[in-house]
Image 1 (tube, helix red, strand yellow):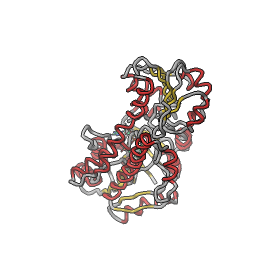
Image 2 (cartoon, rainbow, N blue to C red; image 1 turned 135 degrees about the vertical axis):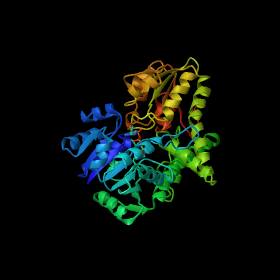
Image 3 (cartoon, protein in one colour; image 1 turned 180 degrees about the horizontal axis):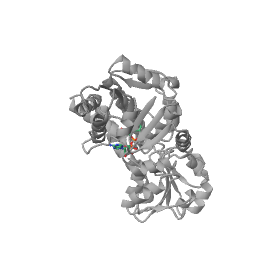
Image 4 (cartoon, protein in one colour; image 1 turned 45 degrees about the vertical axis):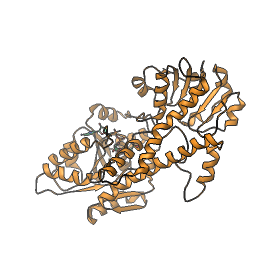
Length: 433
Ligand SMILES: NC(=O)c1ccc[n+]([C@@H]2O[C@H](COP(=O)([O-])OP(=O)(O)OC[C@H]3O[C@@H](n4cnc5c(N)ncnc54)[C@H](O)[C@@H]3O)[C@@H](O)[C@H]2O)c1
């Protein structure tokens, strides 16, 4: 099929590359010329494992192209995906201005019947809004249908998530359109959930809010474990093996971040309040998450007798491993808070340092991970990159001037750390203090 994907971000680029790989002709459109130029030279605008290869192969084979010409892409495509950003506004509601602008552009340039697919995460009712905007601008003799097809990929595993999703949700206004999307996705051989447009929009928010709440729930239990002398890692193993619960997203740590969970929970809460059906559990989940970085900060301040004048080594900046995305990163929030408290912070991240430098110029950026430990009173592990999972604690200890290791992601057995003469502080595992 001939497809257009508007918005070359994490979702748009991965979606475009995967559809091209499945044999479709795909034009990816962005209004940032620089991004388009980079991609034509096979330079990725962000880091995502496996992305460069799949983009290069499909671009060279002529199935995947990049353009700033939205009008031309609309005319040449039968299905048009909208994958632009939907950032949060100050009050939590979703800023739909990018979606609205694209809908108007589509309306102005439409030359034939098209299916418009919302891949961006958008509040319930946006599908109808997009259709209204297109109708306002398009010639009256041309028809469109608007579908909601939310994206569930995670950064760091985006290609495999998009190639092999748990399920494909298609919110279609009628059977004919649903059949067209089913045909497009049929080669993936994955379960498809066909719903109304509004239900599909809600499925995305309900899924993200549930996962975020699972994290906040286990973090709350972890904080109690600290007080009562239980170990959250033993607790989560005992809880997570219950097949009704499962162990995914049941890891205690410094909280959730990234470009989706924080904004999507805020947006769902905003919508629930707007309709007079406030989801109080989401409110609690957001509040728990906001406080979670402070738990590690307080442990460090208590153990070190204050943070001012101390040197802290920080491992990790991105909001999760496998990405250089710093949006709403709790690792970055902790580094910034340490700097504000008067500490010297030596940081290392395998992928996110260049992006971080303009945002956090006062940190000391180390070109190698063990360099963060040089002269450090404490080292903090903030993002669970694989590279940080087999640290040589003897080497770390030798380079440090202090003896404290803060495991913000609970990835280590405290005994392994202690054997090197370090004191171990995790989340919900008691303290050596
Ligand atoms: N990042 C994720 O992990 C993820 C996962 C699932 C869903 N989503 C959702 O997908 C959507 C996109 O997220 P993202 O992280 O890919 O965003 P992003 O910010 O990385 O990319 C959005 C792109 O859209 C482009 N754009 C904006 N206005 C445009 C216009 N008028 N014409 C052409 N291009 C335009 C921007 O230049 C940018 O390159 C959001 O709604 C997000 O919530 C994101």
